[in-house]
Figure 1 (cartoon, rainbow, N blue to C red):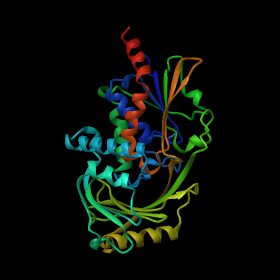
Figure 2: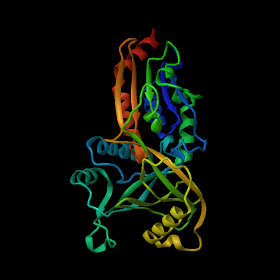
Figure 3: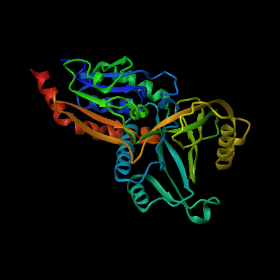
Figure 4: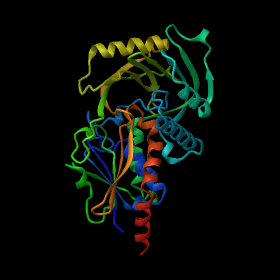
Length: 355
């Protein structure tokens, strides 16, 4: 049995939530002992190229309305809820949280229909109760996550024998073909995020960063998730589970912006918008702890979850990147699809390991 039969490549996107979700799905199907995760950055690192730790991390209506996005949302939500319901180890830093979301522009009919089919405790807010400028609003039970703690926790779990003792290797890989670490490597899961636009052997021109800026505050009075999806802006308030009352305030969705520097005027705008959305934030208990910038790995037309065969040597690559700001909510659904695509090749690995 080889430890690098399966390689999950993170590169500058690191062992972020997309790659970790693939590793977790493979582990649950019995392939943990065959996996090596290769990444320049690992959970616990802080770098502008490592987006996952900066995420507000919740389930929300921020995703697109195409069929794949809606399906991945549904899979992600149902999977996370099931993990919390049964008290799974993977759910340590997940929490059921009351949520209120507003849209300045009416969501598509398909999106509204999809949400009503599976969101728990869903109530459409009457128009008479909507804030000025809001066209649509809902209340429901969401999932919030403590993003950095969750990523570190998943790495710790996956490294344990009962998950297959997945290997994590800090390495900078120059091109996709180099992710086939040895003659044993049969499958590479390509989870390289923003790097996909310029990475040799991928060069996906549809990829771009979506810059965000957040303010981390200590706010004991905040107990609910709140979001307002506006015209050319996003405002959100996301409490972090098991974090001593810390809350993520945001934010921005700046397409194609690679700027890694925090802007004081954006911090001021975030504090004003979130305070207007949830006035309890304006009380004396709220303390600003820090400001951070993240670059969401986005893609025109939505995320790419696709199998690519390499005919000359019978190996395969499964591409899984471009989730934008939906990695924590859709990542588990995307991982299920990505692993399903590799089912035939995975079967060969399992058969070979029995010999």
